[in-house]
Image (cartoon, rainbow, N blue to C red; front, side):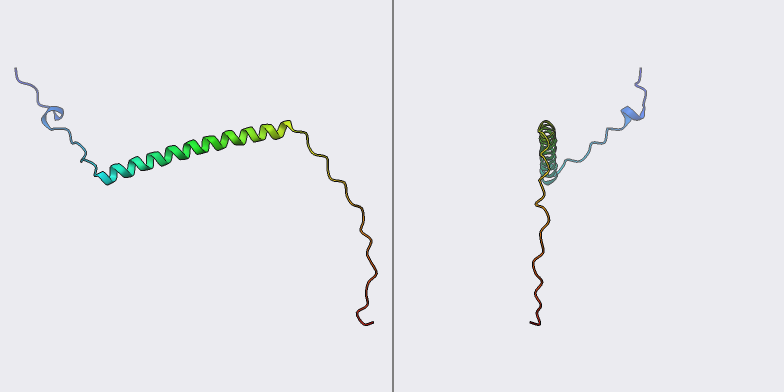
Length: 80
């Protein structure tokens, strides 16, 4: 019995061409940079949440008391 010919067994799969060393290095570097950026963003979010919780626990500072009105001194007449 002969094997039925189909497009799957008649043609070989097209393999992608090999990447150049520069492309491999570039993709690896970009992956590392992206991972570091994601880690930094997660750390920033955690620190921001901790700061907001700490600020929420602290009492609000009392408003500063005003000094009162400043009395204006005598105006000088430059013509004298």
